[in-house]
Structure formats: C-alpha cells, structure tokens
Length: 472
Image (cartoon, rainbow, N blue to C red; front, side, top):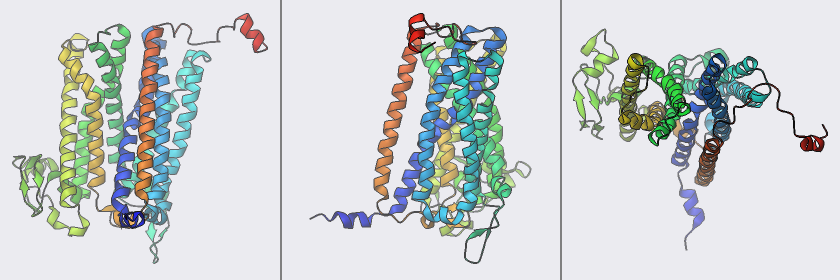
C-alpha cells in the first residue's frame, strides 16, 4: 500500500521553494512595468488633451486610467502573495536578516499606499475636478511607482551586495544602518536598469495592443495616438537601456566576478576572452557549440585595456561558492536572450525614430506593425531573462557571502502543496484579468467616443425621478 506520509517526508523542500518563488516572481514582474510606466503615459495623453483640446487624447487618458486601475489591483494581489512567501519559504533568511532586508520593503509599502490613494483620486476626479488640478493628482502616482520600484530593487541589490549591518558573535544582525542598506553598492545600477526597463517594457506592451488593432483595420486617429504615445516612450527608453545595460555589465565584471564568468561562459581565468553567442558549458569545464567572437568579451569588459583584459574564470572560485554547470548554462542562455531581444527592440526603435524624424509618421510597411505587435512579448521575455541572470547568477547564495539558499529555505516538506495552491490562485487571477480587460475593451469600442462628452467640472444634474429617489 502506498505510504503517503513517507512520500511527503521524502520531498526535498528546497527545489519546491525555489520553483514557487521563481514562478510567483516571474508572474508578478509582468505587471510591474505597467504599474510603473502606464501612469506616465496617461499623463502624457492627459496633458495633450488639456493643452491642445485633443478629444482623442482625452479619451485615451480616461480609458487607460481605468485599465491601469485593474492591472494595479491584480499586481497588488500577486505582490502581497510574494510578501508572505518570504516568511513561509525562507524562514531562516528572514529570521536572520529580516531587520536589514525588511527596511526597503517597509519604504515600498509607503509608496504603495501613496500610489493607491492618488490613483483612486485621479480616477474619481475625472468628472469632479478642474483640468489642471486633476492632472496634478496623477503626478504622485508616477513618483510613487518609481519610488516603490527603487525600494524593491534596493532589497534585491542588497542580496547581491549586502551592506549596512554587523553580525555579532552569535551570528545575529546588529547595528543596522538603513541608509547603507538601501544605498548599497549595487543599488544605483540595478535601479536604473529596472526603471528604464519598466518604461521600455510597459511602452512596448501597450503599443503592441494598438499595433494589432491597426493590423485589423482600426486606423483611426484614436488608435494611432494609442500606438504613438507608448511606442515613443519605449523607443526613447531603448537606447538609454543599451547604455545603462553596458554600465551594469561592467559593474558586474568588477564586483560580481562569478556571475560575470557565468554570463560570458568563462571556465578558466584568461585574457583575450571571446564573446560566445549561445553554446554551453560541459561538466568537464569545456565549452561546446555557439559562435565565438575572438577577444570581444575582454574588450567590452574594459575597453581601456582591450583584448588584454583579464576575466576571472569559474575555476577561480571554490566549487561550492559558484553556480553549478546547469546554472551557468541557464545564466548564459538568459543573457543571450536578454541582449539579443534588446538589440532587436533597439533596431525597431531606430526604424520608428528615423521614420518620425523624416516623415513625421510611423513606418508605412505592414511588416513594422507586425514587428511592433510582437514587441510587447519580446520586451517581457527580455525582462524575464534579465531577472534570471540576476537571480540565478548569484547562486548558491541568497545573501552573497553570508547565507546560501539551502540554508535559508524552509524545512517544511509540505511546501509542494502551497505551490499547487499558489499555482491555482495565480491561474485564476490571470484568467480573471484577461476577461476583465477584454470586456472593458469591447465595451469601450461599443461606446465609441461618447465617453468624454463632459470629463471635467460638475456632474450633470440627475433626472427628476432619480433625484427624488436619492432625496435631492
């Protein structure tokens, strides 16, 4: 007879905890760019509506703000689950480092409530406030989105570059300095990289919807404007991200050498290291497959010394303090995917920019719209790949140099059950989100352009019968 109890006790909780955390983080992060950048794009449309009396821009701002509220609410649900998971899946980590690690999350909570309050005011104020006071109620949403993201990234950066605390003789965290915890060495690089990514990914995600609509024949000014505003934001962010990403890579070269060795697939310390596109590391330390560009990895790591730049290989670190062969291959593949997709998105942005520069219009070829419609998915994949590089590249550490993942994880063998519950919850939330957004889109199309008839100022008086019912 099958002994269920013995099977449960035989489960290794560490892989389950890692998989659950990866799933919930990987799902939640899809909504993050919308939460950060959509408010800015709403205000761009709102500003244009007020300054130029643009009815289409006004309608976009109104409808985007409602979409934004729905995605914000769903993001709040998935983000709250993550907060509980830190305690459930990583009790030893939180028990030892919670006094330091929790500081950025406390600040993020303040930004979250600020964002929620002003989002409610902004949406409620469409028909109740004058144009400019209403516009300014949207600005705190943008600021809170940026601040909240920076706070969460600060916590992640601290895991890569722990600072601002002391361990006493019992191994307990004491003398916590909140400023040093938040503004650790990795903070400016990771924060800049994530914030620009949020505007890039959010812009491409929203623009891709309108690109698909234009391919289906919806070429009216409303849809063109709905494409142009977010795509322009993404197109501006793309070259900025290329520069920021280059700076981050060089910082990783200098400060996280094991992660850099995995990124560049460098088994042994050497100079004149090639840039290997794809390929993989074998268990015997050799590299197979892929395309090797001679000397390029060394040159890009430090152009001042060129191809003579030395890169530390994986053999420079003890086997138990560096990623496994499988993890190295995951990091390297994720790096190739991130850089490859980012380069394609950059080239698409250049195409759009040149067309706008010379013709003041989007490219005419349908090929452009097809590529633009796929840019949203490509941008999300690039962002997910970048997150994989950051997290898997830190292995085996959860806090670099202080605690390994296996030391931090729960010992509860029933963790597989919570993963199944979370899987069902997120599936339900995802289906609900898609159905709500689809229903809103259909209703908006059915309404046409009637919605913005009187967006600002007092509401129209109620009909007599309705007024009597509410006692007016």
